[in-house]
Structure formats: C-alpha cells, structure tokens
Image (tube, rainbow, N blue to C red):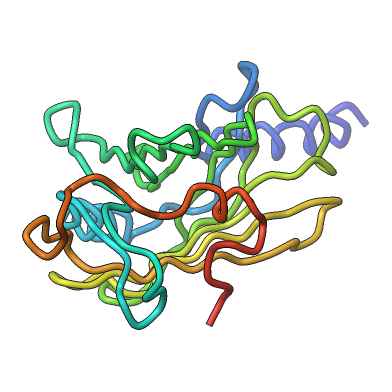
Length: 208
C-alpha cells in the first residue's frame, strides 16, 4: 500500500526536476516547457538590430524621426530596446538568453513589467514572444502587453507587432514598420512623432 501511495509523489518529483525554471515575479518559480533550440539563433538576429531606427514612410508618412534604438550591454549578453527615446512616453525592453530560452522584459508606460518567452521557430522565420508573468500587475484583468513578434528582421528594415491585453483578452495590436535611421535625411535628429497624438490609443498604426 505504501509503495502505491509513494509512486505519484516520485513521478511528480521527477517531472519537476526535469523542467527548467527561472525566477518569476515576486520571487516565485516559473517552470518552462522544453528547451527552445532556436533561442540562440533568434537572439543573434535581434542583436543584428543594434543601432537606431525610424518610421518606414509607407506605413506612417506623417511621422518622422527617431523611433527606437537597440544597444548591446553586459558584454553582448543582453539587448536593450528603447522605444521613443528621450520622451515621457519612453519604454524599454531587455532581451536576453536564459539557458535554452530567449526572454524579454518590457518596462511599459502603463507601469507594469511583463516578461515573455520566445516560441520555437524556424531560423529565419518570425520570432514570437508569449506572456509568462508580470511585476506590478495587481490583476490579470489589468491592461498589459501580452505578446510581441518580430515578423521581419532585415539589414535595412524591421517589422514588429505588440498585442495589448485587458480583461484577459486582446485589446489592440500596434505595428512598427521601421527602417534604419538616417539623420541626414531630416532637418534635425530630434524625434518628431507627435506626442499629443501618440498619447491616444489610436495614434500608432493598427495591425496590417
């Protein structure tokens, strides 16, 4: 009888030991699925974005100037993405490897910090991040960024999308179609993304 009772406990312990985990929000542990064999290649592609980017004119011809910068830190172990740098609306996302996983943490203007994990994919395909948890989020019903995708990563152009959730369901997608920033193409290197319009939920281009 005792061996029958212990068997489920032994199986559960073995399963837990076989699962990788990371430190989650507020010190809890988050158990991860199987290793993402694409994580290293995905991170190398994100690292190739280092530099400054501006709106692609075909998506947002009325918006000009610097939109986002990518900068490596930690001896190349993490990529810092700064969206709308220097503005009150500025937001930061940090991408890094955690073993066989590619992780991002997004420091959002809403005041919370969602963490997402890249899904396995083809070496040259889309890189899709899905929500794992968040800090400073009182309820899962509260608004937060829930997923993010790099659809295209090319030397001279970039296409990304962010999905915002509220009440545990999608509440809008925002697409960023960007090209390498060329300060010689404008009269000033200062950004001009019309802050008063961007503060509106409808200001950024909707999903294609």
